[in-house]
Amino acid sequence: MSTIAPQFRLSRFIASLTDIIFWVLLIFSLVGLPIVFIVLFYIKMPLINNQLLTPYLAMTWMADPSRTLPIIKTLLHTTFFHVLAFPGFGFAALLAAATIFVERKFLAKMQLRVGPLYCGKIEGILQLMGDGLKLISKEIIIPAKADKPIFWVGPLLFVGTAGAFVSLIPVAPGGWVVANPSVGLLAVFATIGFFPIISVLTAWAANNKWTFIGGLRALHQMIAFEIPLILSLLSIVILTGTLNLSQIVESQQHYWWIVFTPISAIVFFICIIAELERIPFDLPEAESEIVAGWLTEFSGMMYGLIQLGTYLKLYAFAGLFTVLFLGGWNGPSVWPPFPADIVTQGITIGPVTAKIAGLPLFDQQMLNGTLWFVIKTVGVILLILLPRGVFPRIRIDMLLHTGWYKLIGLAFINIFIALGLLYAGVLGPGGLIQ
Amino acid sequence: MVDAVFLALSVLTIGSAIVALEIRSLIYGSIALMLTLSGIAGFFLLLDAPFVAMFQLSVYVGSIAVLILFTVMLVRRELIFNKIEDKRRRYAGIGLMLALMLGIGMIIIGSGMKSIETNSPSVDYKKIGEDFLTYYSPALIVMALILASSVVGALTLARREDMTNDQRTD
Image (tube, rainbow over all chains, first blue to last red):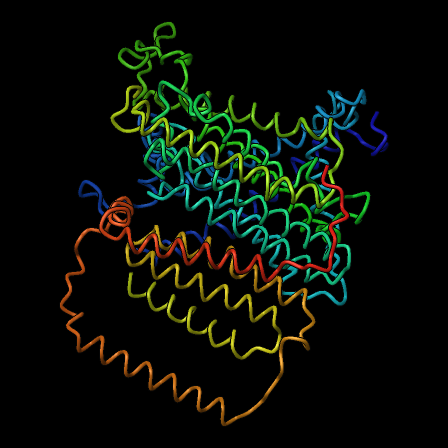
């Protein structure tokens, strides 16, 4: 028996569900359908194969099983799907949500706690959904003296910028990326540059000393670590001779760049942790010093949006590390090929043989690439989560010292190593190792 | 399509530039300045120069605007800003701007720039880098020297003799 709702009855729950379904159907058929037909009256439908595409015909085509898969296949390659579902927002948000849950359980196990336990019976698996519902249903409180326009726009901009960052990460071969500009890496730098502005502006807008101190810390930290971050990636650009992220992945078919540029990888990893404001660099939201830093005044879903943006950013940075150093989607082909019999002869069940057009839905290469990308990215995410259970927070002057002195120097060392490899004729265009 | 985007970008850039000059709040002024600079990045994108556009975003919006925000937020504004409200100055400024724009516009239109072929393929950034390192290498060296000397100058100006560093660095 649940302790939250002692009056719970399954029969009443099912009854309420059927009730809702009944009302939805009734309202749709009385109000929705007439509206659809009124709208359709004014839209000019196209001619396909000398047939006017009436809604009836469109529905017939969609209901036709031999046409369903091709329709879905064309849908999969539209920009709409790319942005909303697979390499874009949906996929990233799913991974981000999984990250939040795994982080809580993982840290709990590291510190000999149990973590989320009650919600959802099995190891608290529904905790995340409960938290989300709580955040959505909470009241949004805005401080009386806050600068309201900036305060409202801040979380939206944060999620938007994180989404723009996610859209640049190539996931699988064959164009499975939302945006593929020829200057992808520069676009990443340009996108990263917006985060400190957003955090310091929202921190200022909340009109609270804790948020302002946190915001200024965030600004200091992100500016200090942006320079080594950019410098550490220059060695990759020198070696590959391109700024396009998909081409950088394709250049790693035989060797991952982490083999030749380990110092860059380490510098980049430290910069990721600092840019994400995670322990040991979580000074902007140091909860034992300045309440919650620049997030102090956010409540309800505004806080939820910031949190979503943070984890989207985490996924995007882990994906970028995978793309640049760990070979992206490259990996041994382990995904089983789609059985050819089903494509050529169809499925035979007893006397019936069903031949389905448009199979296979995804090609094997894409699934294999996605599998390897996800495995590597999840590994990097776990590595980013790991320090949270191990290290204490460091002081701000040590942080800035690390950023400005040590990491910049290390990044330069690896640039010179990369240049040496290039001029010795080992790597790069026309080198010994292609 | 491009014309509509161009018009929207122009309105955004010029409008936020005017806002940046005229608004009372310094924070909003710097936000408007950021919008102006982003609008210019948009113009570069329209001109098929994504390389320059991305640098415009990451340098001007990501760094310069952040520096301005820093200054506005951390320095008391009575110390750096002296408000002088003068109608005649404003009109003189607008007049000067119009005269300058007319003059430059006439020069540009008269210079035969209109006959430039606009359908040629966009220049690859690799070509720019190649040119910089071969034909324009003296200019590159001079620029690097100027930047290095300005960094050294900034460090010298920011250094303070009367303060001892008593914070541990270990």
